[in-house]
Image (cartoon, rainbow, N blue to C red; front, side):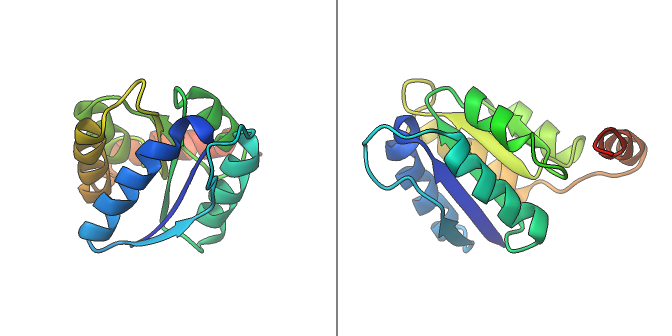
Length: 146
């Protein structure tokens, strides 16, 4: 699977750990930045990652900022994105299975350590959308974008 990844300065260290996990799992990763610890604005990273997912250039996306909140809010402004903030493995599984989340957002190392991030990413990448009754709900979300 091709994964678009991005972070602001608050997520830089965790992004490196997540990229290692994705590569070890055999996924292709495209890094949309940031690449330094210099302060940057998370919408400038969220939008290109979200556009890569919506356009099909990436199958899924992962975004990281200090809390995972701001970058997810920005990504969810792009039609077709269902970004989910996950700080635990249950949410990572459920947002894929029930909500067909196409972007995972996480808080940086002040919120999530590399070990937990590895577990979250591994589960999120392995979980497929269940469909069924959940499809109806996702379609209602899509209808809100029009």
